[in-house]
Amino acid sequence: MYYTGARPSELLDLRIKNFGFDRLCDSNKNLIDCVTVVLPTKKSGISRKIFIPIINENRDVLEHLTKFLQNYNNLTEMRLFPQRWSTVHSIKYAVKRATNNELAPYFFRHNRLSLLADDGANLYQLMHFKGAKTPNSVLPYLTLAGRDIRDISLKMK
Image (cartoon, rainbow, N blue to C red; front, side, top):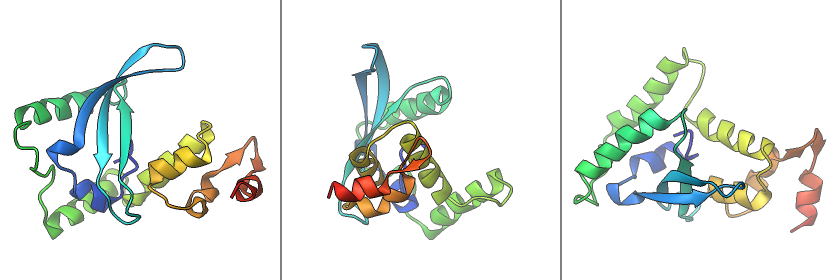
C-alpha cells in the first residue's frame, strides 16, 4: 500500500497480471531490480505503472510476493485479495490495529506523496503517482526549501 500509493479500492482490484519484474538504472547507472505494479483504472480514469525497487526495507515482503506470483502466474485474472466487504474492513482494521488506532489506510498514500515531494519529485511525477488528472490535488504536497511553490506550479498551467 505504502510503496504504490494505491487507494484501498485499487488494492482490491489488483490481479496477478498487474505485477511484473523489471530492472532499472538509478542516477548512478547501477541496475536495480524492481517489482512493477500496474494500478487499475479507478477514480480518475488513469491507469498507472509504479516501480518498487527491491531494497533492504521491503525485501522480505517483495520476495514473498514474488513467490506467490510465480506459483500463480498462469492465473493472470486471479485477484490478489478476495472481493468481499470483509476484505475492505480487514484492510482498515489491520492499519488501525498496527498503528494503535491512530491512522487510516489513506495515511500511507498521503505520507508517500509527501515524502516523494520532499525528495524532489516534480508536479508531473506526483500527478502520475497519485493518478491525478489535474495539478490541483497534488499542489498541497509541493514545497521547496521551506518556500511554497504552489504559485509557481499554478503559473505553469
